Amino acid sequence: MNEIIEFTIADKDILEETINLYDFKMPDNLRKEGWRLPNLEELRKMFLIGGNFKNDWYMTSETTSDFRNMSIHYGDKREMWRDVTESHWACCYIRLIKDK
Image (cartoon, rainbow, N blue to C red; front, side, top):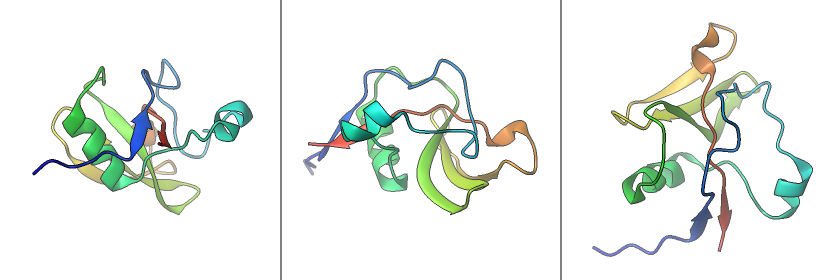
């Protein structure tokens, strides 16, 4: 099956280090250009396409609160809700996308 990807993936992570959802603030200039966090399905597709991802956790836009969001580990594709109030484990890398 040949699937059409309907978004553009940023060439690199927005930050050199990990950050949690609560502390992350999208820069205005990137938001105005249409860049955004990928949802869960988009991040799954990004990992299938490949690229220069780190063997670590990446953040999605899917949340249950300001303190809890869905993340995927690039290396083993684990998916889990990460809660910033529980520990530093909620920190993730961020790779932005924008619609084509």
